[in-house]
Length: 109
Length: 89
Image 1 (cartoon, rainbow over the protein chains, first blue to last red):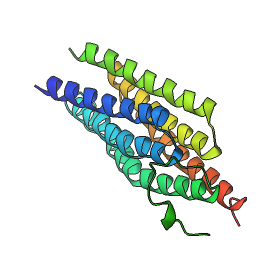
Image 2: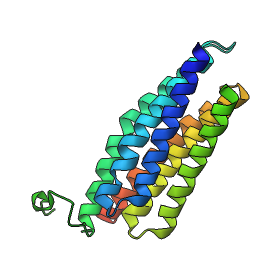
Image 3: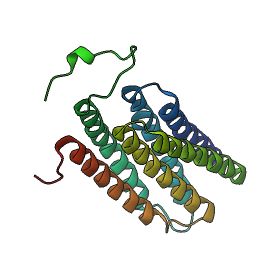
Image 4: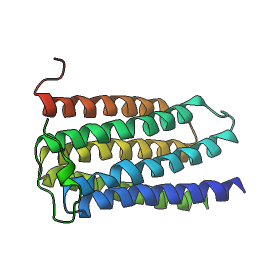
């Protein structure tokens, strides 16, 4: 039973990470490209780490704090790095495609 | 069953890593390359976790924790450099 749970979590997590990287390649401008890694990849990593927790909870080593620490750390730091990246992109005045909305809300710094 | 799923997910994560390398090489701007590096370290954490699961040991998770911490710090430092031209003012 736990093997099925681990397999489903691994496939969902790997799929989300792959979708995040495909979005990184396919999207037309930087402001859209930021969505892939910050959202899809974070969710995929959460699924993969949950699979690792389930996998090691039934082995001899027992459940360890490292998986929980990595998942908390990734969920905590992904928004901060996304914020810093979008700040530097606005600072460099990167060109946006015509489908990107909200450019009139950008304030001069 | 788990061995097959592990192989499939290894292939998916390797493809994701190659796609981020492509974005790192093509660019076109500096924040794009930083974003590609950010994605690459997340993908490498996922690969290390999968390798640990296929080997059946949690020994490699310390390396994953180190990569998570140092990758975040380096992303913030390079973004700060792009924003201000200086890391510590």
